[in-house]
Image (cartoon, rainbow, N blue to C red; front, side, top):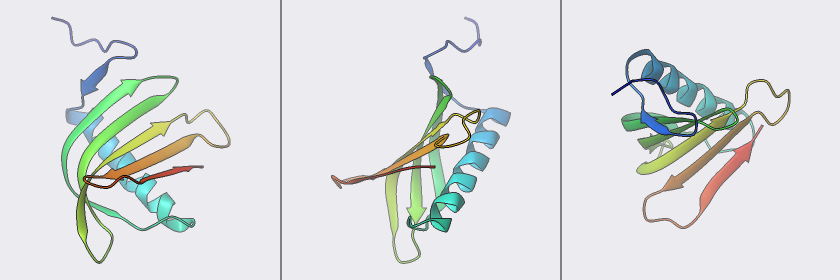
Amino acid sequence: MSNVPIVGGISQLEGNERKEALELLDATLAQLATGDGPSFKALNVTSVTGQVVAGSLNTYEVQLDNGSEIKQGTVKIWSQPWLKENGTNIKIKFAGEDDELDQTW
């Protein structure tokens, strides 16, 4: 079986791809905190998947620390770096909660 990614297909990220995805997670969480969004730090990332869909969509299963509590959640970052505006979207949903944070810049 080939390791060539399928456009639109979801794949578990490993090696350099995982490292780059984790750097993107940290940078995006830092950018979120500079605006009117909450401040989170990623602690334990248990899974990172990637998907090529008019940009790249990375999905993280992660523990996030907001300074007062640690919560398990899913973070989705959709990156379209060629766009000058609104090229990054982040969605954060915590386990057991209905609300989802959704911000674009």
